[in-house]
Image (cartoon, rainbow, N blue to C red; front, side, top):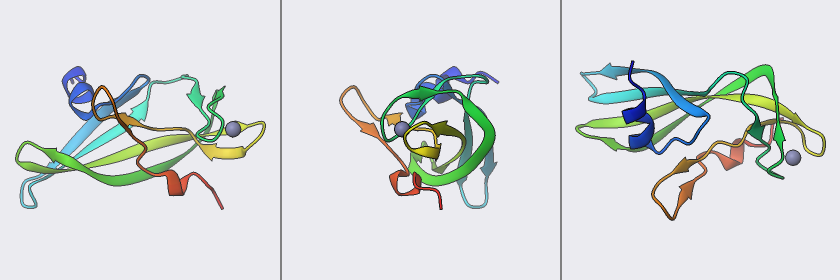
Length: 113
Ligand SMILES: [Zn+2]
């Protein structure tokens, strides 16, 4: 699958990439599956320090801007990392909406219980 077009259209930033998608024609809805490249260093969302990830992850779903005629949803596989200061936390995930702004889709989920 050529992911570059999808990555750019969605505003993904390395090492995050589209790993697949599914289309529900009845609901006119497309879901993109997003995850980081293997063995990437990811940032703690609280202090922005980079850490290697553990083998654990959490799936986050959220609605996104429309993708042509489809409603669009992202299903993001977010690795958990262990920050020295903040403990076990989902890695920072953000999308570049344009040159000037970024979207942090699930800040309320950064605290694991
Ligand atoms: Zn931290």
